[in-house]
Length: 150
Image 1: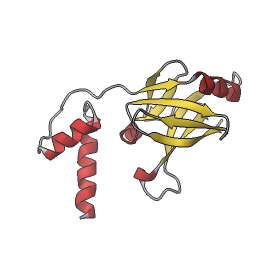
Image 2 (image 1 turned 90 degrees about the vertical axis):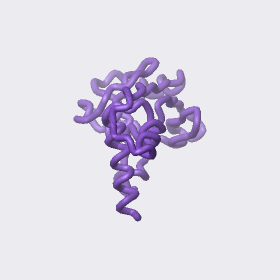
Image 3 (image 1 turned 180 degrees about the horizontal axis):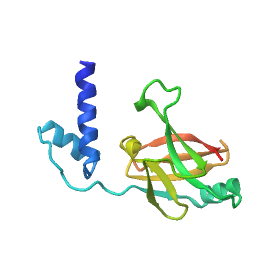
């Protein structure tokens, strides 16, 4: 059963890699037994709140680098149990894609986009002293960390 489930997940991932419009359409394509290109994948959009933009600008303080929304799976046991974090890096990692934002450029790993929503917002919560990643459907990470990897 587990092997079949993993095969199904891989199949849906392959459909998404072929520029599927959405995860829902990829699953529908899988359920209907279709293995064809079903259109282009919608562009991911991430909105920065004013508070989050100010906080990240303060953290990087004009330092050269790139901001990456990292889907970190270290210590999680499984790729589907990852945790998002903001990483300040020298260069965007291979396999990342620049996503549309309302300001601060941000890179996301293409292979991990399947675990994220197409429209998200990054906010900063002073009471928790952490960033927050949310979408219209859910809070993806209520206490998202920032790491300077330079």
